[in-house]
Length: 384
Image 1: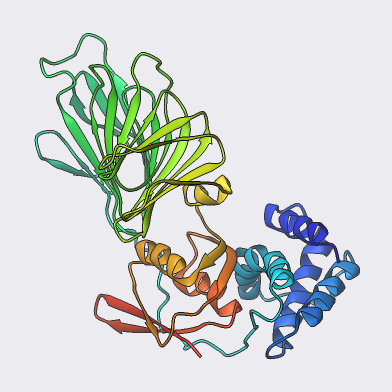
Image 2: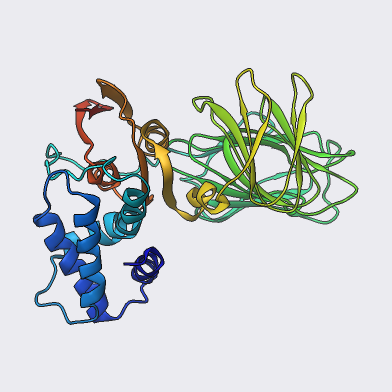
């Protein structure tokens, strides 16, 4: 079966464009496939099974699927793993195996952590954004700070109400694990802040540049202003732009700072040596310890999947996946034995439970168990 046809089918399923017969048949056949899967399936066997799925569409399904299975298949394995599994095995036959070993049953599902988000004002006081009602939160520098809706605050200019401290006041938006927030800054720039991150910015922009400070990860849609460049400082580097869309991942536990450009052009400057790189759309700069910038073409859509409520893994190692899941579900990971040398593909909605998210690993034959000690949750990855 052609890979592009399989991907197109899964995309239709994901977007809800399959007919009822197609949808039910995919779910029925996949359910049957999992129930009857063999250990260490060959690439040829898997290809034949997937071909059977495609050929039998759109024959009506012979029985109704259990709703719990539909959720798991639709949210997790079918959309994120089925088509990608086919292409991955074709690239490296025999590298991955499918295991039917069951997980340890968890008494309580781990849901996204939903820690609190805070807005720290220039006087040091804090607003708990999760508890605050929709509406006006504060007034600073002639700007009204408004909670527009859950997950979004904005700075709105109130004519004739500027203070004597215009441009001096700074605010800090901080997100905990398992939550993300959006802020519309005074200049019209929009920023999405990922989990366990913070953004420090002035309540109004004066002077020759617009400067903000990011810890963690953020996606920026910068309002264009040729006379006042926008600068994002992340500790080791500055990103300088006029007006563009880009993502910065600068978490302290990541091995490198990654800046990905989606639209426009940016200049990334490493502060210690003053070396720099110019990025064009679809390019990503990687700044690791004791190395110069490396620039490469990437799938920018995967980089910003978090902004759209997804975990999206493409040729990702298990440690990268563990770091992302840890920040969202507030769990600690530990690997017993050697780190699995596998590259994983998959797509998971961020509102799924931790157990469902971990099906991406289980699908590729990796086992785990959860240890609960009070509020501390440790996940042990078991290797063979």
